[in-house]
Image 1 (cartoon, rainbow, N blue to C red):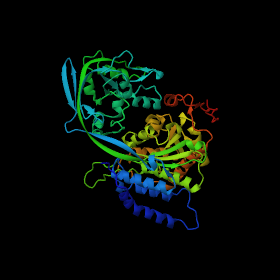
Image 2: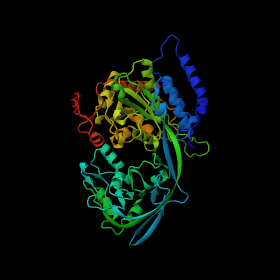
Image 3: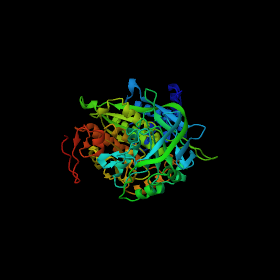
Length: 566
């Protein structure tokens, strides 16, 4: 059965909280004084509830996440939004499948002319559970395909002259060093789909010097062992972007050396070539055969996206939508020793993003001014499991996908300082940038460039699910000015995805209220503009995902306005 509370159970559970919130709101404001549009206290109250121990880390499909979803829906309803789901519902049910490894450990056998060697999972090989097949016994020859990239427009054609149909491909970890970081990150995510297009049945990844330095084998083993998750379509199968590729595995240097035994070039030679920035290792068939045995156990759950709709006022533009979204889920509870904190509360990641979402919606409600375009406020599930909730919505939208003009994602704003600038990850790809700049300028804030291009953040959060459907989208974050860089680094190396991401951090609540105001202004600017945001004419992602959509010329660096759309 789905892990939901009944409607009565949720209301009964939330009633004391909602009554207390109402009492606090009444006592906080004199009777004759209108409430402020943006309040540090209100922002804190949302984070305090969503990051409370009661919700047990808001794991997708859990009781805690169901309570969080009910809370967000109650806030939307109280603000006068309309239900944005199908059939008048605040919710969109996302069917999820979680896979864990069976009782017998997976094994991987490599056979060459010199003999066979078998490794259990967690030794020199790492295998994850399958959400596609419960029992597997797969055996096939292996072909080395360099980095495993098939992107001729980027000068990448690693499959040229190689027959991998019905075979297992071995690929180098990472990417060639000369690609722009966001394009490299996108192509890295596409390696499996590329293998599928060429007919491969499996893919194993081997290290380069760079990838081994970035993450040691021992560290990878310690971090392994978690479940896999995917969303289930109406046919009962998990959505699969790489049909035919039945497994992936990671090999240690020791196992990789065995895989290349007897090949025209051994693993050490290939790895040495990959270490040369000017070199591009070419593929070749290996002499080895690989066999995988694996069993997986499945659990089916339902988790909810929450959708609130603010209808637009313009008789024409109201049929276009601006999506403001953030992920509601976090990572639940960890194994811990006696007396240790088990709950991963996720105050900044991402109760703060959801609080921003709610407060931006409140500002529209209190202002009484309907925007010209409609706005969808979307709290998605399962971001931490691979952007699953946003991907589900993007493939099953409650409004036509072509009518979504733009998406602004709010994910883990670092609200530990008085920010003086913001970063709109992905703004360089579309005219969305001008709306961010206009709103920020009105508040005396700067808009800085991506301070972490090596992290490829543009392709790593929920806005990217919309980008892949052709929708211009950004993720807005607090910037690195006024000491923000140090605060970002402290959080990412400290409380991020740990039990310390709680309400008792030194969160700057006034800055949080300003962040909510900025997002309201961005949403209002986008919703009221005469023209919807457009991809830039020379942009890689716009041309890839929206090839037939109107484009606009990229503005001059001096800040000149874009020319009219084609």
